[in-house]
Image 1 (cartoon, one colour):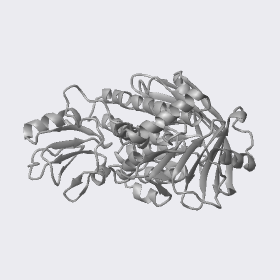
Image 2 (cartoon, one colour):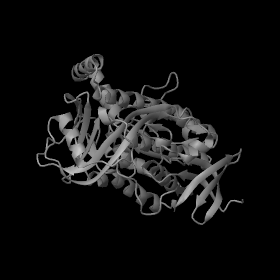
Image 3 (cartoon, one colour):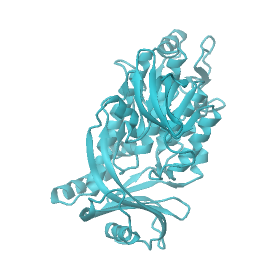
Image 4 (spheres, helix red, strand yellow):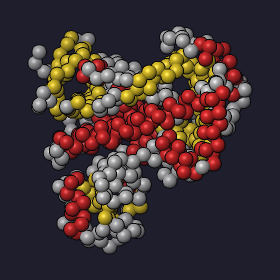
Length: 478
């Protein structure tokens, strides 16, 4: 079959990860087509419900965060295992909270942005196979009208846990099911608890609750005695009510469920995020336990890392080797999230004396040892993650850039242009530094020049002398 469509980049999957990536590419002037097997207008089931601080910062860099915050409830404390408080109200961020909002609210804004920037979404189109060569990828697709192919320079699989792209590559997805038959619902409470997100377990059962801010709460529960039920087994409201009561000592007067469902959770990670001209992101690359609510957030941060790199390679500003840094930077973070969320889930499910003792120690350490507390909060919120830096690089290299004050605005407002930002100390001459892919701005204080990547991480920092700055810019902007 000859290709019926051609596009520099094709993204499989119109979930949050694929939509953010498509919007970034389209905004950067890259023609991008998104293939989505769902029919138009049929949304994903709203299982993800938490947007963490780092993700909100990245959405702020796209002009979406403030609008999204209006759709949900802001939470400044997480309580795990009934007693361990994770204070996120003092985060060094413009968004010192967890936003509890349905996944479809995130998708709605990302879809709008992608379409406004010219991305094309092809619904009812499923990836059936692929072949790649030195020049690109031929994607076999299946539609109601029949089978065809799409030719592209790069293919990104953001098509979820059962990724057809990953399967077509023949990549393993090592890991295991860590919890089965978690009952899930959105309900109202007669006796509303404090506005915090809580996860608590008793050994035989555990539960979690989170407020949406519209009168409904997301509620989940698991019972060790019924852990083998399949995902399609019906959920009775009384079953979930009893689980919540066992976990928290109260059912808070649950009533009026607007939907009920059941799911299982895997812990898996693909060994390679890049295979030639095919890349994987989001749940296609990694799956995490629900503890901490990091799954959707990790996928969105994958997309933010990958989008500007694909655009730079497409426009000839960077060599293809830049795409190798996507795996080098994001795979370790996916692994770290697997580790931390998995530990939190296992402690919530603790039932034998050793596990309960470990949970007690974890409570004491997280509550009283400040460096451990900062690390735990940094991992959950995404604020604490950094990327590897070359030997001898400035200490800031690879670290998250805060929302620096600039003359005439904030850093994350300037990042909305999708370019590198060179922030110079006050009074530093900017002559000769302007070039494609770079915005030059001035800080309101400080004595170092700072180069911030389009995804909000420091690429370089150093003395504000012209020759030094040129050397710092060269690897990134020519």
